[in-house]
Figure (cartoon, rainbow, N blue to C red):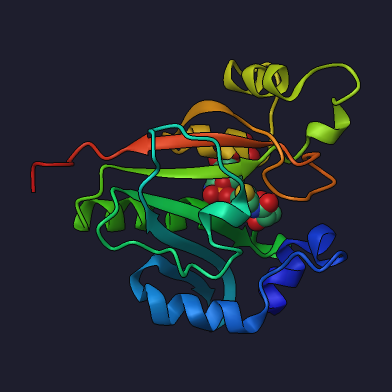
Length: 193
Ligand SMILES: CC(C)(COP(=O)(O)OP(=O)(O)OC[C@H]1O[C@@H](n2cnc3c(N)ncnc32)[C@H](O)[C@@H]1OP(=O)(O)O)[C@@H](O)C(=O)NCCC(=O)NCCS
């Protein structure tokens, strides 16, 4: 809970972080999908995932829909996609490669479970700074071509994810103005194992 509040301090102000019973439920429902990073015994990063199947490959969705209001009760062990519901690193431990390690572990998990892909909706972290001059789609495309840097989308692109499209009304968030980038990583070993 402390990590959540520190990592999502803006969202914590309006109560948009996991309640502790949700974190407990995630571990009960899909323990392998709940990862954390520790430095000298201190919890400094976490990554929460569930397995889903979308009706179509790139179906629109909101964070509440895809995570069943954050409960993961819709987790489907027979689904084809690992869904990244949450990723956070404590502000004091950023830019040290911790989220990259967590993403690598997510990829290892997708490979181990022979899932077709990892997908996620990443909040367009700095879009609020540019909203007056461009649409969310224009902003994301500028990040994709390297004209702009976004702490979340640039990180996802550097980690091999592909920007698919904008998801509007994804999550109540003053930074992204509720826009998220639908990103996808295809498992290169899918079907081989
Ligand atoms: C997004 C987030 C998880 C990234 O975490 P992180 O641990 O800082 O990520 P990494 O260190 O792996 O990568 C971040 C940057 O540090 C760089 N980096 C990695 N290791 C490094 C090192 N040893 N030295 C210097 N820089 C390093 C990476 O290249 C990357 O560069 P970029 O900023 O140019 O993209 C973190 O900023 C965060 O928790 N944000 C708030 C919560 C949030 O919004 N989460 C996303 C929800 S959708």
